[in-house]
Each structure stands twice: as structure tokens, then as C-alpha cells.
Image (tube, rainbow, N blue to C red; front, side):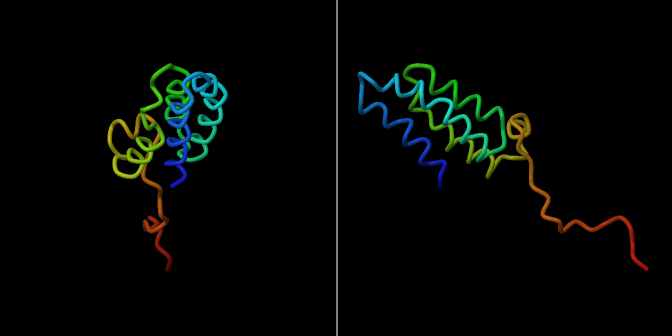
Length: 99
């Protein structure tokens, strides 16, 4: 649920129209690092930083979209392009047999 907080904080700058875009400049690297830690994807982190730096793009919920992509579409073409794939849960059997 921490991904939701990232989006809410990024959108909160709209409540302060004069200083909001300035706060976005400071918040952009923080969001990029947080997205990298959450998803392990440089692509998602880069999109988050760019989204915070560009004016009037804060309404795009980058962290939420990253979570949806990782959770439901990790094996899709887009999911693989941004670096997501299913985690190996260790339940696959070994090709070597024990005797």
C-alpha cells in the first residue's frame, strides 16, 4: 500500500499552486528512488521522475500503474519490457533425480 502514498504525496502539490511545482523538483528524485526500491524497475523509476519534473503531469498515478502492471501483467510484453517477470517460488522440480 506504500505505492498509494507515493501517488497521494505527488498529487498533494496541487493544493499549493505557487510552490507546488517547486516541491515537485525536490520530490522527483525521492519518488524515483522509492519506485526503484518498490518495483526494482529502472523504467518505472524513470517514468516517475519524469512525471514529477514535467508540469501538469502529477495526476498520472505512476506508482499505482506500476503496481497494477507488476501484479496483473508482469508476463505481458509491456511487463517484460519494464523488467517485471514472475518470481520463482522454488516449487519447480529439479531435473536431477535422487537415488
